[in-house]
Length: 400
Image (cartoon, rainbow, N blue to C red; front, side, top):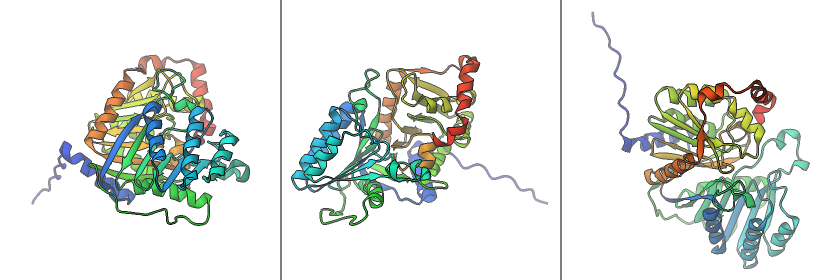
């Protein structure tokens, strides 16, 4: 009689292999091929982000496609409007896609300025024209594509709040990425998808060359789009795979932390299996207190599982960045909340590149130096009034 022995567990991949393993998992489970040879430049805060975007617009030769959730008021809003109008007046095809809810505060004079210069402007689901069901599904993507060659995406909106360098509460903290290489096509497709809904008619014209991309860098990039639809989303699969794949370190910065219990359980499971998990969220400076309360109800469970929760001090933390094991990063427009994961149009980049990830990890370390960790013992002693406020968010958590 022979006895069978259980197979030995497969050895963990070496550090150099972790990125390749994660790439193949995501390609196989999401079905979106990653591209190679991309050059990515992380941009931190308005002092770096806005000049890079405006330089790209001002250098456009054929096309400018800009899509944003927030286009508010202030000098930076006027600067962008003038820049777009100048290119359109010179014969560049300029298209601007605004979310009907998030950009409702834009100054009408700027719309007039751009349209009179030839900028094509469309709106994503203006609330006055929608059923209550569709009003809950917004276009939260932030995309700029110039000449089909260079693209930007991340968390920044066009408003004064994002100007500066996060030095005080009037200057928000955010991260954007400049992309050159084949991944630009995936970002451009995110724009085209929403433009097709909002502006029926010709989707492309002679200005769109669709030329082959050069490969100026070494980053592997998978572009994943979240969609305002019912059912399990690619973005949810992405987060599930990345969190479950973490072996040593997982770092997550998000403006709005209000996930469902499933994703909280994933973070807790990572902490319990020995992964160093850091969660960075806004502190006393937040523009959506109700969302903050919905997320705070999870702090006790997270810290008990070994997750370190940090609350950013100087200003509103608006970045949406995740890094894993020092080898890969997820950055884009999506927050770690029900709204981004379930309801809104989003776009994120999964980047397998140690140098790019190292820069984001360095930014994260610098942010932690300006943050305060949640002390579990002190958190458990918070009063009944605070607990009642957290519980009061229950009826609307699905929409936060």
